[in-house]
Image (cartoon, rainbow over all chains, first blue to last red):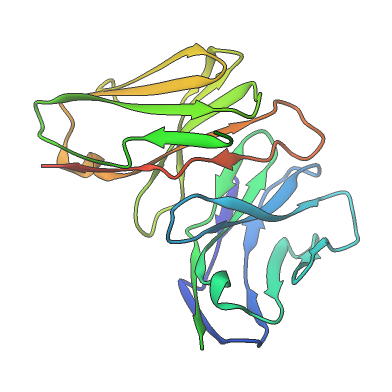
Length: 111
Length: 115
């Protein structure tokens, strides 16, 4: 069975600092996509960043980057220069034939 | 209006009531989804519609009845719900088989409380 595990229910980071959110997954598929979605208090989830499994290069989107370790089945999200607006729930997701989501990590940003 | 819109934002209903959740997307997508979000649990996929045809029903109880009249609108009809059905219900849409892993676009959800 395909699973996604986010072992950190909650994380805190000081404004302007860097934080890394962990995600591991389990699959026997070789071709898949990985995503990080952000759910702010408004509840509308938005895509933060995605990674194709066949690409070795880690994806980056402005202050957001991932550390994709395919052999270890690890997909962590690094947020640099954290801002108050980054406070949200972050969900890691895997998609081969369908989406599998993790349980989420609540990120608090301290002023 | 753009994006994915869900109404109502909040809903309180008794166990004998019948209500409907509405979702509308203005993105030209051809797939629509209902997800259930409960605290400390992964998002649970309930239903998938591709080009208005239901392609997935994840063993959802019959007290939840989806309807997709066209590619832009999706409904979730609710009747004789149980208190454990209280959750945030999220609608999402996507392009089928796009080149980006079928990015999901979500609405803001309906927070449902069953008394």
